[in-house]
Image (cartoon, rainbow, N blue to C red):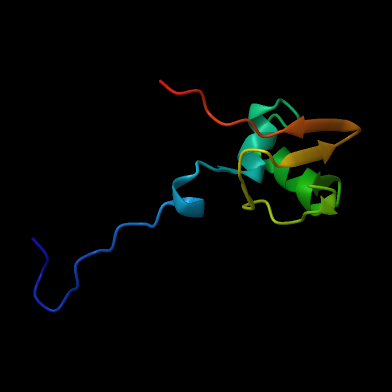
Length: 84
C-alpha cells in the first residue's frame, strides 16, 4: 500500500522495446577482457573501447544484440540470449 501523499511507483520501461541489453562494463567482465568493474571502467574511460567502430567512454552504455565491441585488438559481437 502506498502511503498518503506518495504516488505509486512506476514500472521501468523495458529497454529498446523489450530487447534485452547488457551494460558495456558488465559485458567487458563477462567477455573476460576485464577482471573487475574497476578494470572495465579504466579501459572504457581511457579510450580503449569502440562500440560499432565509435569510441565509447560511457561505461553504462547499453549494448543490444548485434553491437560490435572492440578492445585491445579483439572484436566481440553481442549475441541474443538463447531462449529457455
